[in-house]
Length: 399
Image (tube, rainbow, N blue to C red; front, side, top):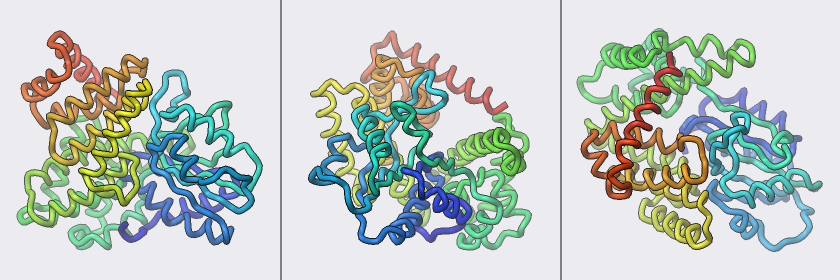
C-alpha cells in the first residue's frame, strides 16, 4: 500500500463512531476505502488489547466466515470481523441500497450486530447495502467521496509530475479528476511521458467532459460543503467526472506502454482491479485468482446458486479484462448478464457498464463476434439496443 495521505477528517469520524456495532465505508472503486480501513484497524485494535481481528474477502460465503472465525464458542474476547469489498447486488425497491449476494451471510451479519458481546463489524463495499430487518441501521456509514482540495494537494506533493505544477493548475487537475486519488495517479503517470504537456492534456480532458454534458468540472466541489442533498449530488457528479476522465487516461496509458506506464497499470490491477474482485491482497496472482473463481463458480453451479454464479462470472470477466483478454471478458459478462436478467436484477447495470466499455475498446464487429460465442444470433441486436439505451441514459444523467 502507498503512503496514507489525507482523509484525517474521515478517520476521526470513524473513530468517533467506534461505539456502534459496526462501520461501513462505501464508495467507488479505487477511492481509498481499503486504505482508510487499513489505517483505522490498528487504532481500533489498540482500544481493545487482547482481541482478535478476523478478515475475510468480500466474496466470502457464510460458510467461509464461520470457518475463519474458528470453533463456535461464546465470544468473550474483543473480536472484529472485517469484510473488504463486500459482494452485493442491486435490488429494485430497496431504497437505493444493494443486498448481499449470499442471503445466508446477510442473516449471519444481522445476528452478529444484534447479539450482545464485545464484537464489531467493519465492512468496505461499493454501495450501501441493506440487512434483514433493518439491521444495517445500527451500523455507522461513511460514503467515502473525493479528496478535499487540501488532501489532494498533499497527495500531489508526492507525485513527481503534478508536484511541479502551480496552485491553479493543481486545483484544475483536482477538479477534472473528480478528486479521485487513483485518477490523479494516472494523470501523473501520463504527464511523466515525453511530449505530454499539462495544459494540452487538461484542455482535451475538459473537452471530453463537456461533450458528456459536464461543462464545469469543478461544479461538484462547490456543493460538498452544502446541505446533505447538495453534498450527495456533488459526490455523484464527482464520480461521473472520475469515470469519464479515468477511461480516457487509461486508454492513453495503454497506448504509451513503456516501463513506467506498465508499472502503473500493474498497480491498478493489484490495488484497484483486484480490490474490485473482493479478494485478499495476497491473492492477486492472475492465474491463482482465476482458479479460485472458477472453483467457486463450479460449486455455485452444482448447488444451483444462480446469484453466486452471476457474481462469479462477473469477477472472471474482470480478471480477463485486467489481463488483456477482452473477447473472453465479453463472453463472461454476457453470461453474467443473462443470469442476472433471469434472476430479475433490473437491467444488469454492472454488466451493462462493463460491456459498454468493452464494446468501445474492441469496436462493434469484434465485440459482436465475442458475444456470439455465448449468445444466440437473435439476441445480439437486443444486446446492442440494451447497451445503446444504457449509454444514452448515462449521458442523460450527466446533463
